[in-house]
Length: 548
Image 1 (cartoon, rainbow, N blue to C red):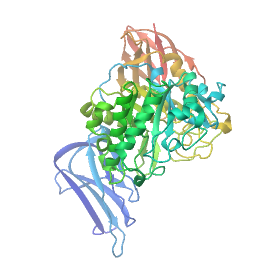
Image 2: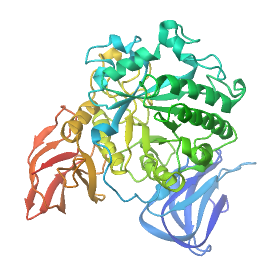
Image 3: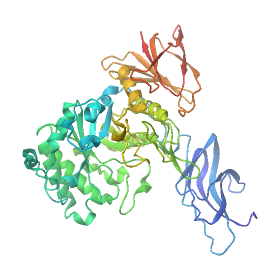
Protein backbone atom coordinates (compact mmCIF):
# COMPACT_ATOMS: atom_id res chain seq x y z
CA UNK A 1 0.00 0.00 0.00
CA UNK A 2 1.51 3.33 -1.04
CA UNK A 3 1.83 5.70 1.89
CA UNK A 4 0.08 8.45 -0.09
CA UNK A 5 -3.20 6.50 -0.30
CA UNK A 6 -4.42 7.36 3.15
CA UNK A 7 -6.49 9.87 5.08
CA UNK A 8 -5.93 10.70 8.74
CA UNK A 9 -7.80 12.56 11.48
CA UNK A 10 -6.28 13.35 14.85
CA UNK A 11 -6.97 15.19 18.09
CA UNK A 12 -4.64 17.36 20.14
CA UNK A 13 -5.19 17.05 23.91
CA UNK A 14 -3.18 20.21 24.56
CA UNK A 15 -0.48 18.49 26.60
CA UNK A 16 1.07 15.07 27.05
CA UNK A 17 -1.21 12.83 29.12
CA UNK A 18 -0.96 9.35 30.58
CA UNK A 19 -3.36 7.21 28.53
CA UNK A 20 -4.69 3.80 29.51
CA UNK A 21 -7.68 3.40 27.14
CA UNK A 22 -8.57 4.90 23.76
CA UNK A 23 -12.09 4.73 22.35
CA UNK A 24 -12.70 5.26 18.65
CA UNK A 25 -15.67 5.25 16.32
CA UNK A 26 -14.16 4.97 12.88
CA UNK A 27 -16.54 3.22 10.46
CA UNK A 28 -15.00 3.95 7.08
CA UNK A 29 -18.09 3.60 4.94
CA UNK A 30 -16.62 0.60 3.14
CA UNK A 31 -13.92 2.65 1.46
CA UNK A 32 -10.89 1.66 3.54
CA UNK A 33 -8.67 -1.35 2.94
CA UNK A 34 -7.36 -1.14 6.51
CA UNK A 35 -7.11 1.30 9.38
CA UNK A 36 -4.73 2.06 12.20
CA UNK A 37 -4.65 3.87 15.54
CA UNK A 38 -1.64 6.14 15.94
CA UNK A 39 -0.17 8.22 18.73
CA UNK A 40 2.42 10.97 19.11
CA UNK A 41 3.85 13.13 21.86
CA UNK A 42 4.93 15.95 19.52
CA UNK A 43 2.67 15.71 16.44
CA UNK A 44 5.68 14.96 14.23
CA UNK A 45 6.76 11.42 15.03
CA UNK A 46 3.81 9.03 15.00
CA UNK A 47 3.72 5.46 16.33
CA UNK A 48 1.21 2.86 15.20
CA UNK A 49 -0.49 1.65 18.37
CA UNK A 50 -2.74 -1.02 16.84
CA UNK A 51 -4.60 -1.95 13.69
CA UNK A 52 -8.32 -1.16 13.59
CA UNK A 53 -11.17 -2.91 11.81
CA UNK A 54 -12.51 -0.31 9.34
CA UNK A 55 -15.87 -2.11 9.21
CA UNK A 56 -16.59 -1.84 12.96
CA UNK A 57 -19.93 -0.06 13.21
CA UNK A 58 -19.91 0.71 16.92
CA UNK A 59 -17.28 2.43 19.03
CA UNK A 60 -14.48 0.13 20.19
CA UNK A 61 -11.94 0.36 22.99
CA UNK A 62 -8.22 -0.28 22.89
CA UNK A 63 -6.56 -0.88 26.27
CA UNK A 64 -2.81 -0.58 26.78
CA UNK A 65 -1.09 -3.23 28.85
CA UNK A 66 1.11 -0.42 30.15
CA UNK A 67 -0.22 3.18 29.98
CA UNK A 68 1.44 5.41 27.37
CA UNK A 69 2.20 9.13 27.30
CA UNK A 70 0.62 10.94 24.34
CA UNK A 71 -0.56 14.35 23.30
CA UNK A 72 -1.89 13.50 19.84
CA UNK A 73 -4.12 10.55 18.88
CA UNK A 74 -5.03 9.78 15.27
CA UNK A 75 -6.91 7.31 13.11
CA UNK A 76 -5.48 6.60 9.67
CA UNK A 77 -7.55 4.96 6.92
CA UNK A 78 -5.75 3.33 3.97
CA UNK A 79 -8.17 4.16 1.21
CA UNK A 80 -9.31 1.97 -1.68
CA UNK A 81 -8.48 3.21 -5.15
CA UNK A 82 -11.28 4.95 -7.04
CA UNK A 83 -13.20 8.20 -7.26
CA UNK A 84 -15.09 9.66 -4.30
CA UNK A 85 -13.74 7.12 -1.79
CA UNK A 86 -14.60 9.03 1.35
CA UNK A 87 -13.65 7.69 4.76
CA UNK A 88 -14.73 8.83 8.22
CA UNK A 89 -13.60 9.19 11.80
CA UNK A 90 -16.53 9.87 14.08
CA UNK A 91 -15.00 9.91 17.52
CA UNK A 92 -11.68 9.70 19.37
CA UNK A 93 -11.71 9.62 23.17
CA UNK A 94 -8.92 8.97 25.65
CA UNK A 95 -9.06 7.88 29.30
CA UNK A 96 -6.83 6.76 32.12
CA UNK A 97 -6.63 3.06 33.02
CA UNK A 98 -10.22 3.08 34.31
CA UNK A 99 -11.68 3.97 30.91
CA UNK A 100 -15.03 5.70 30.54
CA UNK A 101 -16.29 4.20 33.83
CA UNK A 102 -13.81 6.00 36.06
CA UNK A 103 -12.27 4.51 39.20
CA UNK A 104 -14.33 2.32 41.54
CA UNK A 105 -15.86 4.08 44.52
CA UNK A 106 -14.58 3.27 48.00
CA UNK A 107 -16.69 0.55 49.54
CA UNK A 108 -18.91 0.88 52.61
CA UNK A 109 -21.08 -1.67 54.44
CA UNK A 110 -24.37 -2.58 52.80
CA UNK A 111 -27.58 -1.29 54.32
CA UNK A 112 -29.54 -4.38 53.20
CA UNK A 113 -28.88 -8.11 53.31
CA UNK A 114 -28.04 -10.15 50.23
CA UNK A 115 -31.50 -11.73 50.34
CA UNK A 116 -33.19 -8.32 50.40
CA UNK A 117 -30.99 -7.16 47.53
CA UNK A 118 -32.03 -9.84 45.03
CA UNK A 119 -35.27 -9.75 43.05
CA UNK A 120 -36.60 -10.97 39.72
CA UNK A 121 -38.40 -9.46 36.74
CA UNK A 122 -41.69 -11.15 35.97
CA UNK A 123 -44.90 -10.64 34.04
CA UNK A 124 -48.62 -11.26 34.48
CA UNK A 125 -49.20 -15.02 34.69
CA UNK A 126 -45.50 -15.97 34.56
CA UNK A 127 -45.84 -17.53 31.08
CA UNK A 128 -48.75 -19.72 32.20
CA UNK A 129 -51.33 -17.39 30.61
CA UNK A 130 -53.54 -17.41 33.71
CA UNK A 131 -53.77 -15.62 37.01
CA UNK A 132 -50.97 -16.35 39.44
CA UNK A 133 -53.37 -17.32 42.24
CA UNK A 134 -54.05 -20.48 40.22
CA UNK A 135 -50.32 -21.36 40.36
CA UNK A 136 -49.98 -22.89 43.80
CA UNK A 137 -47.16 -25.31 42.95
CA UNK A 138 -43.59 -24.39 43.97
CA UNK A 139 -42.49 -25.42 40.46
CA UNK A 140 -44.00 -22.48 38.56
CA UNK A 141 -45.18 -18.91 38.97
CA UNK A 142 -44.34 -16.64 41.89
CA UNK A 143 -43.88 -19.52 44.34
CA UNK A 144 -41.03 -20.87 42.23
CA UNK A 145 -39.14 -17.60 41.89
CA UNK A 146 -39.66 -16.49 45.49
CA UNK A 147 -37.20 -19.26 46.35
CA UNK A 148 -34.45 -16.84 45.27
CA UNK A 149 -36.17 -13.44 45.01
CA UNK A 150 -37.26 -11.05 47.73
CA UNK A 151 -39.16 -8.81 45.33
CA UNK A 152 -40.65 -9.06 41.84
CA UNK A 153 -40.89 -6.32 39.24
CA UNK A 154 -43.77 -6.40 36.79
CA UNK A 155 -43.88 -4.85 33.32
CA UNK A 156 -47.28 -3.20 33.78
CA UNK A 157 -48.28 -2.09 30.29
CA UNK A 158 -50.13 1.21 30.26
CA UNK A 159 -52.08 0.11 27.19
CA UNK A 160 -53.62 -2.71 29.24
CA UNK A 161 -55.27 -0.06 31.42
CA UNK A 162 -56.28 2.77 29.08
CA UNK A 163 -57.03 3.22 25.39
CA UNK A 164 -55.53 6.70 25.25
CA UNK A 165 -52.65 8.13 27.34
CA UNK A 166 -54.81 11.07 28.42
CA UNK A 167 -57.52 8.81 29.84
CA UNK A 168 -57.84 8.15 33.57
CA UNK A 169 -57.67 4.47 34.58
CA UNK A 170 -60.60 3.32 36.72
CA UNK A 171 -59.02 0.87 39.13
CA UNK A 172 -62.02 0.92 41.47
CA UNK A 173 -64.23 -0.46 38.72
CA UNK A 174 -61.50 -3.00 37.95
CA UNK A 175 -61.41 -4.15 41.57
CA UNK A 176 -65.12 -4.95 41.40
CA UNK A 177 -64.50 -7.37 38.54
CA UNK A 178 -65.36 -5.16 35.57
CA UNK A 179 -61.82 -5.01 34.16
CA UNK A 180 -60.15 -2.02 32.54
CA UNK A 181 -61.34 -0.09 29.53
CA UNK A 182 -58.96 -2.20 27.43
CA UNK A 183 -59.37 -5.69 28.93
CA UNK A 184 -62.65 -6.56 30.61
CA UNK A 185 -61.10 -9.67 32.17
CA UNK A 186 -58.15 -7.87 33.79
CA UNK A 187 -57.80 -7.44 37.56
CA UNK A 188 -54.34 -6.34 38.69
CA UNK A 189 -55.42 -6.67 42.32
CA UNK A 190 -55.86 -10.40 41.89
CA UNK A 191 -52.47 -10.80 40.19
CA UNK A 192 -50.46 -8.67 42.60
CA UNK A 193 -52.14 -10.25 45.64
CA UNK A 194 -50.91 -13.65 44.42
CA UNK A 195 -47.36 -12.28 44.23
CA UNK A 196 -47.65 -10.93 47.77
CA UNK A 197 -49.02 -14.27 48.97
CA UNK A 198 -45.88 -15.90 47.56
CA UNK A 199 -43.79 -13.61 49.81
CA UNK A 200 -42.73 -11.27 47.00
CA UNK A 201 -42.67 -7.51 47.47
CA UNK A 202 -44.32 -6.00 44.38
CA UNK A 203 -42.48 -3.40 42.29
CA UNK A 204 -44.27 -2.10 39.18
CA UNK A 205 -42.77 -0.56 36.04
CA UNK A 206 -45.44 1.35 34.12
CA UNK A 207 -44.41 0.59 30.55
CA UNK A 208 -45.28 2.94 27.70
CA UNK A 209 -43.63 3.16 24.29
CA UNK A 210 -44.23 4.98 20.98
CA UNK A 211 -45.55 1.68 19.61
CA UNK A 212 -48.27 1.72 22.28
CA UNK A 213 -48.88 5.45 22.28
CA UNK A 214 -47.20 7.53 19.54
CA UNK A 215 -46.08 11.01 20.53
CA UNK A 216 -49.00 12.68 18.76
CA UNK A 217 -51.50 10.72 20.89
CA UNK A 218 -50.46 12.59 24.04
CA UNK A 219 -52.53 15.80 24.20
CA UNK A 220 -50.92 16.99 27.44
CA UNK A 221 -47.97 14.84 28.62
CA UNK A 222 -47.68 16.50 32.03
CA UNK A 223 -51.41 16.16 32.71
CA UNK A 224 -51.40 12.56 31.48
CA UNK A 225 -48.60 11.73 33.92
CA UNK A 226 -50.52 13.43 36.73
CA UNK A 227 -53.80 11.62 36.17
CA UNK A 228 -52.27 8.18 35.73
CA UNK A 229 -49.95 8.63 38.71
CA UNK A 230 -52.74 9.85 40.97
CA UNK A 231 -55.06 6.97 40.03
CA UNK A 232 -52.33 4.34 40.44
CA UNK A 233 -51.08 5.63 43.78
CA UNK A 234 -54.56 6.02 45.24
CA UNK A 235 -55.47 2.44 44.42
CA UNK A 236 -52.25 0.38 44.74
CA UNK A 237 -50.10 2.40 47.16
CA UNK A 238 -49.52 1.62 50.84
CA UNK A 239 -52.33 4.03 51.74
CA UNK A 240 -54.61 2.28 49.24
CA UNK A 241 -54.79 -1.50 49.04
CA UNK A 242 -51.07 -1.75 49.81
CA UNK A 243 -50.25 -4.23 47.07
CA UNK A 244 -47.43 -2.17 45.46
CA UNK A 245 -44.44 -0.67 47.27
CA UNK A 246 -42.63 0.99 44.34
CA UNK A 247 -43.63 2.29 40.90
CA UNK A 248 -41.54 3.43 37.92
CA UNK A 249 -42.54 6.05 35.37
CA UNK A 250 -41.59 3.95 32.36
CA UNK A 251 -39.24 1.03 31.79
CA UNK A 252 -37.06 2.09 28.87
CA UNK A 253 -39.00 4.90 27.14
CA UNK A 254 -35.91 5.77 25.16
CA UNK A 255 -37.68 6.39 21.84
CA UNK A 256 -39.47 9.49 23.07
CA UNK A 257 -37.87 12.98 23.10
CA UNK A 258 -36.26 14.03 26.37
CA UNK A 259 -38.53 17.06 26.86
CA UNK A 260 -41.61 14.87 26.47
CA UNK A 261 -40.39 12.38 29.06
CA UNK A 262 -39.48 15.13 31.54
CA UNK A 263 -43.07 16.38 31.39
CA UNK A 264 -44.59 12.95 31.94
CA UNK A 265 -42.18 12.18 34.79
CA UNK A 266 -42.77 15.47 36.58
CA UNK A 267 -46.53 15.08 36.43
CA UNK A 268 -46.44 11.42 37.39
CA UNK A 269 -43.96 11.71 40.27
CA UNK A 270 -45.57 14.83 41.71
CA UNK A 271 -49.04 13.33 41.84
CA UNK A 272 -47.91 9.94 43.14
CA UNK A 273 -46.19 11.60 46.10
CA UNK A 274 -49.08 14.03 46.66
CA UNK A 275 -51.50 11.11 46.69
CA UNK A 276 -49.49 8.56 48.69
CA UNK A 277 -46.11 9.70 50.04
CA UNK A 278 -45.34 6.13 51.15
CA UNK A 279 -45.32 4.77 47.59
CA UNK A 280 -41.74 4.83 46.29
CA UNK A 281 -41.28 6.60 42.94
CA UNK A 282 -38.58 5.82 40.37
CA UNK A 283 -37.89 7.38 36.99
CA UNK A 284 -37.33 5.07 34.05
CA UNK A 285 -33.97 3.33 33.72
CA UNK A 286 -31.20 5.54 32.34
CA UNK A 287 -27.40 5.59 32.10
CA UNK A 288 -24.93 8.27 33.16
CA UNK A 289 -21.82 7.54 31.08
CA UNK A 290 -22.62 8.67 27.52
CA UNK A 291 -24.51 11.94 26.92
CA UNK A 292 -24.04 11.50 23.15
CA UNK A 293 -26.88 8.97 23.09
CA UNK A 294 -29.30 11.89 23.25
CA UNK A 295 -30.91 12.90 19.94
CA UNK A 296 -33.87 15.14 19.18
CA UNK A 297 -36.33 12.25 19.34
CA UNK A 298 -34.64 9.59 21.47
CA UNK A 299 -31.99 8.91 24.10
CA UNK A 300 -31.26 7.35 27.46
CA UNK A 301 -28.93 9.77 29.27
CA UNK A 302 -30.20 10.46 32.77
CA UNK A 303 -28.94 14.04 32.84
CA UNK A 304 -31.21 14.97 29.94
CA UNK A 305 -34.31 13.13 31.17
CA UNK A 306 -34.52 13.33 34.96
CA UNK A 307 -34.71 17.04 35.87
CA UNK A 308 -33.46 18.28 39.20
CA UNK A 309 -36.74 20.11 39.81
CA UNK A 310 -38.43 16.70 40.06
CA UNK A 311 -35.88 15.33 42.55
CA UNK A 312 -38.08 16.09 45.56
CA UNK A 313 -40.69 13.67 44.22
CA UNK A 314 -38.23 10.87 43.31
CA UNK A 315 -37.22 8.32 45.93
CA UNK A 316 -34.82 6.07 44.00
CA UNK A 317 -32.40 6.32 41.05
CA UNK A 318 -33.02 3.60 38.45
CA UNK A 319 -30.60 1.99 35.99
CA UNK A 320 -30.03 -1.19 33.98
CA UNK A 321 -26.56 -2.77 33.78
CA UNK A 322 -25.52 -5.57 31.46
CA UNK A 323 -22.00 -6.88 30.97
CA UNK A 324 -21.66 -5.92 27.30
CA UNK A 325 -18.33 -5.36 25.54
CA UNK A 326 -17.57 -4.55 21.91
CA UNK A 327 -14.93 -6.68 20.23
CA UNK A 328 -12.47 -4.85 17.98
CA UNK A 329 -14.66 -5.73 14.99
CA UNK A 330 -17.58 -3.95 16.70
CA UNK A 331 -19.53 -7.12 17.49
CA UNK A 332 -21.13 -7.06 20.92
CA UNK A 333 -20.53 -9.88 23.38
CA UNK A 334 -21.03 -10.37 27.11
CA UNK A 335 -18.20 -11.03 29.53
CA UNK A 336 -17.54 -11.48 33.24
CA UNK A 337 -18.73 -8.52 35.34
CA UNK A 338 -15.24 -7.45 36.49
CA UNK A 339 -13.94 -7.06 32.91
CA UNK A 340 -12.44 -3.55 32.69
CA UNK A 341 -14.40 -2.71 29.50
CA UNK A 342 -17.70 -4.21 30.63
CA UNK A 343 -20.75 -1.94 30.77
CA UNK A 344 -21.40 -3.53 34.15
CA UNK A 345 -18.93 -0.94 35.42
CA UNK A 346 -21.37 1.82 34.44
CA UNK A 347 -22.80 1.46 37.93
CA UNK A 348 -19.88 3.72 38.92
CA UNK A 349 -21.12 6.48 36.61
CA UNK A 350 -24.69 6.38 37.90
CA UNK A 351 -23.38 6.55 41.48
CA UNK A 352 -21.30 9.63 40.64
CA UNK A 353 -24.28 11.27 38.94
CA UNK A 354 -26.40 10.47 41.99
CA UNK A 355 -23.82 11.84 44.43
CA UNK A 356 -23.55 15.12 42.53
CA UNK A 357 -27.19 15.68 41.54
CA UNK A 358 -29.37 13.79 44.02
CA UNK A 359 -27.17 12.88 46.98
CA UNK A 360 -28.53 10.31 49.37
CA UNK A 361 -31.01 8.72 46.95
CA UNK A 362 -30.79 4.92 46.83
CA UNK A 363 -29.82 3.27 43.54
CA UNK A 364 -31.73 0.25 42.22
CA UNK A 365 -30.54 -1.88 39.33
CA UNK A 366 -33.88 -3.00 37.95
CA UNK A 367 -32.42 -5.13 35.15
CA UNK A 368 -29.17 -7.10 35.01
CA UNK A 369 -28.19 -10.58 33.90
CA UNK A 370 -26.71 -12.81 31.23
CA UNK A 371 -28.20 -14.99 28.47
CA UNK A 372 -27.19 -18.63 28.28
CA UNK A 373 -28.16 -21.99 26.95
CA UNK A 374 -29.44 -24.53 29.44
CA UNK A 375 -32.44 -26.64 30.37
CA UNK A 376 -32.36 -28.03 26.84
CA UNK A 377 -32.77 -24.61 25.17
CA UNK A 378 -30.04 -23.17 22.95
CA UNK A 379 -28.83 -19.57 23.01
CA UNK A 380 -27.67 -18.34 19.61
CA UNK A 381 -26.82 -14.64 20.00
CA UNK A 382 -23.24 -13.33 20.07
CA UNK A 383 -24.00 -12.13 23.60
CA UNK A 384 -24.74 -15.66 24.88
CA UNK A 385 -22.49 -17.29 27.47
CA UNK A 386 -22.39 -20.86 28.75
CA UNK A 387 -24.83 -22.03 31.39
CA UNK A 388 -22.04 -22.28 33.95
CA UNK A 389 -20.78 -18.79 33.07
CA UNK A 390 -24.26 -17.35 33.63
CA UNK A 391 -24.35 -19.00 37.05
CA UNK A 392 -20.91 -17.85 38.20
CA UNK A 393 -21.30 -14.33 36.81
CA UNK A 394 -24.68 -13.94 38.54
CA UNK A 395 -23.19 -14.64 41.96
CA UNK A 396 -20.15 -12.45 41.33
CA UNK A 397 -22.29 -9.69 39.81
CA UNK A 398 -24.63 -9.67 42.79
CA UNK A 399 -21.67 -9.38 45.14
CA UNK A 400 -20.33 -6.45 43.11
CA UNK A 401 -23.67 -4.64 43.24
CA UNK A 402 -23.81 -5.17 46.99
CA UNK A 403 -20.26 -3.85 47.28
CA UNK A 404 -21.31 -0.67 45.43
CA UNK A 405 -24.22 -0.10 47.82
CA UNK A 406 -27.04 -0.91 45.39
CA UNK A 407 -30.19 -1.58 47.43
CA UNK A 408 -32.12 -3.66 44.91
CA UNK A 409 -30.82 -5.80 42.06
CA UNK A 410 -33.62 -7.30 39.94
CA UNK A 411 -32.55 -10.15 37.68
CA UNK A 412 -33.74 -10.19 34.08
CA UNK A 413 -35.55 -12.54 33.45
CA UNK A 414 -37.53 -15.07 35.44
CA UNK A 415 -37.61 -17.67 32.61
CA UNK A 416 -36.42 -18.23 29.07
CA UNK A 417 -38.74 -17.07 26.30
CA UNK A 418 -40.71 -19.76 24.52
CA UNK A 419 -40.53 -18.20 21.07
CA UNK A 420 -36.94 -17.02 20.48
CA UNK A 421 -33.33 -18.01 21.23
CA UNK A 422 -31.41 -14.73 20.94
CA UNK A 423 -30.52 -11.82 23.23
CA UNK A 424 -32.84 -11.43 26.25
CA UNK A 425 -34.68 -14.61 25.24
CA UNK A 426 -32.38 -16.95 27.19
CA UNK A 427 -31.75 -14.85 30.29
CA UNK A 428 -34.06 -16.86 32.52
CA UNK A 429 -33.32 -18.31 35.92
CA UNK A 430 -35.20 -21.30 34.55
CA UNK A 431 -36.06 -22.75 31.20
CA UNK A 432 -39.31 -21.75 29.52
CA UNK A 433 -42.68 -23.42 30.02
CA UNK A 434 -41.63 -25.90 27.32
CA UNK A 435 -39.09 -27.30 29.81
CA UNK A 436 -41.44 -27.27 32.77
CA UNK A 437 -39.53 -24.23 34.09
CA UNK A 438 -36.53 -26.43 34.82
CA UNK A 439 -34.03 -24.68 37.08
CA UNK A 440 -30.86 -23.59 35.32
CA UNK A 441 -27.46 -23.55 37.01
CA UNK A 442 -27.90 -19.83 37.72
CA UNK A 443 -30.96 -20.57 39.87
CA UNK A 444 -29.02 -23.12 41.94
CA UNK A 445 -25.96 -20.86 42.22
CA UNK A 446 -28.07 -18.00 43.60
CA UNK A 447 -29.80 -20.43 45.95
CA UNK A 448 -26.36 -21.44 47.22
CA UNK A 449 -25.38 -17.83 47.81
CA UNK A 450 -28.60 -17.09 49.67
CA UNK A 451 -28.44 -20.34 51.65
CA UNK A 452 -25.12 -19.30 53.17
CA UNK A 453 -25.15 -15.50 52.92
CA UNK A 454 -28.78 -14.43 52.49
CA UNK A 455 -29.09 -13.09 56.03
CA UNK A 456 -25.78 -11.25 55.84
CA UNK A 457 -24.54 -8.09 54.17
CA UNK A 458 -21.37 -6.95 52.45
CA UNK A 459 -18.96 -5.33 54.91
CA UNK A 460 -15.62 -4.61 53.30
CA UNK A 461 -13.14 -5.32 50.52
CA UNK A 462 -10.10 -7.36 51.47
CA UNK A 463 -8.70 -7.19 47.94
CA UNK A 464 -9.79 -6.29 44.42
CA UNK A 465 -6.90 -7.20 42.16
CA UNK A 466 -6.52 -8.84 38.76
CA UNK A 467 -5.73 -12.08 40.59
CA UNK A 468 -8.53 -12.16 43.17
CA UNK A 469 -11.58 -10.43 44.62
CA UNK A 470 -12.21 -11.15 48.30
CA UNK A 471 -14.95 -9.55 50.42
CA UNK A 472 -16.09 -9.85 54.04
CA UNK A 473 -19.73 -10.17 55.07
CA UNK A 474 -21.47 -9.97 58.40
CA UNK A 475 -24.77 -9.45 60.18
CA UNK A 476 -26.83 -6.28 59.86
CA UNK A 477 -26.26 -5.47 63.54
CA UNK A 478 -22.53 -6.11 63.86
CA UNK A 479 -19.44 -4.92 62.01
CA UNK A 480 -17.44 -8.07 62.71
CA UNK A 481 -17.14 -10.41 59.70
CA UNK A 482 -18.87 -13.77 59.84
CA UNK A 483 -18.07 -14.91 56.28
CA UNK A 484 -15.76 -14.18 53.40
CA UNK A 485 -16.31 -14.82 49.69
CA UNK A 486 -13.59 -14.88 47.05
CA UNK A 487 -13.05 -15.60 43.37
CA UNK A 488 -10.80 -14.89 40.41
CA UNK A 489 -12.11 -12.06 38.17
CA UNK A 490 -11.74 -14.07 34.96
CA UNK A 491 -13.97 -15.77 32.44
CA UNK A 492 -15.81 -18.88 33.61
CA UNK A 493 -13.92 -21.02 31.10
CA UNK A 494 -10.70 -20.27 33.00
CA UNK A 495 -10.70 -23.00 35.66
CA UNK A 496 -7.15 -22.44 36.91
CA UNK A 497 -6.85 -22.03 40.67
CA UNK A 498 -4.50 -19.50 42.27
CA UNK A 499 -3.52 -18.92 45.87
CA UNK A 500 -4.67 -15.60 47.31
CA UNK A 501 -2.80 -14.39 50.39
CA UNK A 502 -4.17 -11.83 52.82
CA UNK A 503 -4.41 -10.97 56.50
CA UNK A 504 -7.60 -11.45 58.49
CA UNK A 505 -7.86 -11.91 62.24
CA UNK A 506 -10.28 -14.82 62.05
CA UNK A 507 -10.20 -18.54 61.46
CA UNK A 508 -12.23 -20.58 58.97
CA UNK A 509 -14.85 -23.06 60.10
CA UNK A 510 -16.38 -24.38 56.85
CA UNK A 511 -16.12 -23.62 53.11
CA UNK A 512 -18.32 -24.20 50.09
CA UNK A 513 -17.76 -23.79 46.36
CA UNK A 514 -20.57 -22.15 44.38
CA UNK A 515 -20.74 -24.38 41.31
CA UNK A 516 -24.38 -24.21 40.19
CA UNK A 517 -24.87 -27.94 40.69
CA UNK A 518 -26.90 -27.80 43.90
CA UNK A 519 -28.77 -25.37 46.12
CA UNK A 520 -26.15 -25.53 48.87
CA UNK A 521 -22.87 -25.74 46.95
CA UNK A 522 -19.99 -28.18 47.29
CA UNK A 523 -18.26 -28.39 50.65
CA UNK A 524 -14.50 -28.03 50.20
CA UNK A 525 -11.45 -27.87 52.52
CA UNK A 526 -11.07 -24.61 54.43
CA UNK A 527 -8.19 -22.26 53.58
CA UNK A 528 -4.89 -22.49 55.43
CA UNK A 529 -4.44 -19.89 58.17
CA UNK A 530 -1.43 -19.24 60.35
CA UNK A 531 -1.45 -16.35 62.86
CA UNK A 532 -3.98 -14.42 60.76
CA UNK A 533 -2.12 -15.01 57.47
CA UNK A 534 -4.49 -16.64 55.00
CA UNK A 535 -3.73 -18.72 51.92
CA UNK A 536 -6.96 -19.32 50.02
CA UNK A 537 -7.32 -21.11 46.71
CA UNK A 538 -9.56 -19.11 44.35
CA UNK A 539 -10.95 -19.82 40.89
CA UNK A 540 -13.64 -18.38 38.63
CA UNK A 541 -16.18 -20.17 40.85
CA UNK A 542 -16.75 -18.24 44.11
CA UNK A 543 -15.81 -19.86 47.41
CA UNK A 544 -17.75 -18.99 50.59
CA UNK A 545 -15.97 -19.39 53.92
CA UNK A 546 -17.77 -19.36 57.26
CA UNK A 547 -15.66 -17.91 60.06
CA UNK A 548 -15.45 -19.00 63.68
